[in-house]
Length: 376
Image (cartoon, helix red, strand yellow):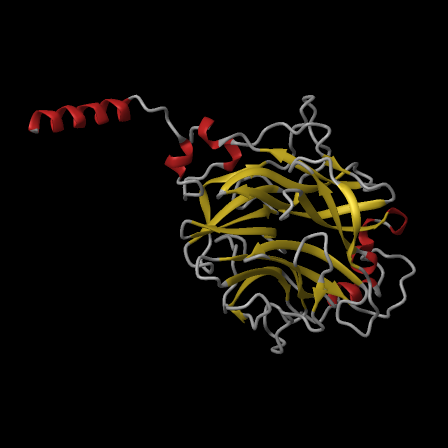
């Protein structure tokens, strides 16, 4: 009996010794050692979602109950100019049979509904998350009656729309179904005029943790006596229900130790929870986390309030490669991941098609299977 046990243990040892390296198990799928940058592949030219006549921005992808893939995205007319997003943007839905696309426009999910509502002028910054058979869409809305003759930041009235940004949520049984939104924001500005979020809040990113609690990351701007406000920071809030109430954490997140004088350090978070940790991808605006201004950076937190750059922070650089070997003309913005069982499969981002900003679209960046990637 003892000899048989010894032989069994020796066999197990030999099998373990010759087992192929599996970076998924080594990474624990989404471990603190996760190296998404090593997974990034050149982008096939077909992996673009372009809608004729519209700017395409803010693509957030989820899998439907029907097995298809749905992108909730922002769009606004090309004729209005790139900076018209807080004035004429609307959130629409596109569908594909594969996470890489091709995506096809289906319908407008959150159209303008009149300035009697807090989000009556424009809807933007969609972040869709599924939980217990429902789909929750966190987004930014604006509402203003200011007359716009030239929708660019130099126009004073443009700032009335930008500063009216608040965060809301809509719910649906399916991504291509009817989205029911509520009549009040789930996150608004703080009444304290000296707070970081006294002027506006936007750019929501949300996920559920293992206890069903919702974490909401958001962009905020303080007041400084000027119409455009002061520095841009990010905050975090928590709720026990997708509809709130959300309790704001009293400190900012995604800060750099030497970034106090910067106008903005991070932007555009995407957040998820896996194996006891929170992960986020942010745009590294001035290169404080990756050394590359405009790159995507991976951040990690155990509690959702204290965030640090991951061991391998650089996800993708300020330019990316097309499959034909050409570099992109612009950086990626508004990151989103499609994950299966905690494993990242595709990275999405919006990009300008040219320097003149006459068109923009969303791209799907393939991510190599983690089993074939060694952390370096």
